[in-house]
Image (cartoon, rainbow, N blue to C red; front, side):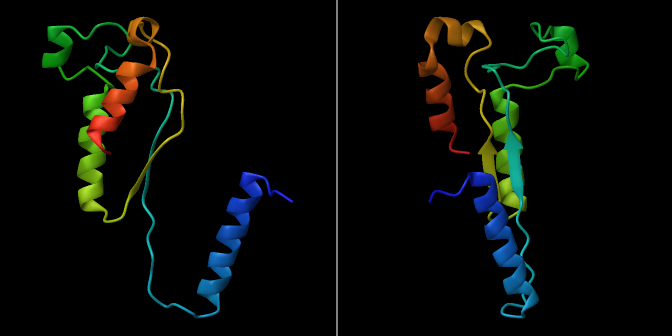
Length: 116
């Protein structure tokens, strides 16, 4: 019988907790998980309203998002926290003209080339 993924995760966490409490391994283990989701093809930085980030906004540090920011932060945190996992929860594709015109090709290429 296939176990639903949430129950499988619960079983793994329970087993690891029991193993730790039984004293099999006294070394402390820290798991760092970096997570994004709902990027919706916002490849470039935007204003806080989702529009084009103006030069004034850039100079005033009011721009948000963008793949370059994600990649930079993930690499920084992976260097700081050895073994950190980076996960994307989905909805990376449609949402901007990048996807509407180029479909999955551009987003897939960006993800693949940035190796985060």
